[in-house]
Length: 162
Image (tube, rainbow, N blue to C red; front, side, top):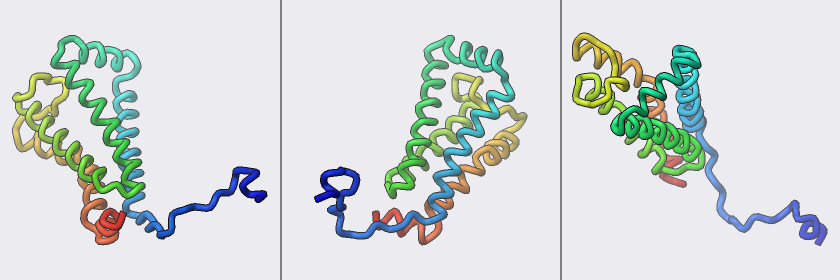
């Protein structure tokens, strides 16, 4: 009676036990968030306040650039949302994160080779091999996160049981 009167303590109606989140999934989710925050911090540090405002100004000059800029922001928020969903055991979150990495890699590769319109979002390099090497080095942390989510048996079991 007292528990009901206070409203602080309520019995859970869930009868089954939930699986604990594996450490590798927690590390992967935290890594996604930290990688994105560190990316933004490094961009702001490199460009400075004036450079950041010029970057945004250049990004919204044409509709194509604005679309790419907004799409990159949407992908950033999707990746962070996926990180929080991973800890909850949502299997779709790891697949969506994989899809965002494929989209980003293909777009960066195409834009760097001159197939994408805005050169603003491309990787500088003299040859295809140099551009590919730089792209792989940029995406290496994300590839390691994907390995943590897809390869270990404990990670696969966690997403299968949720």
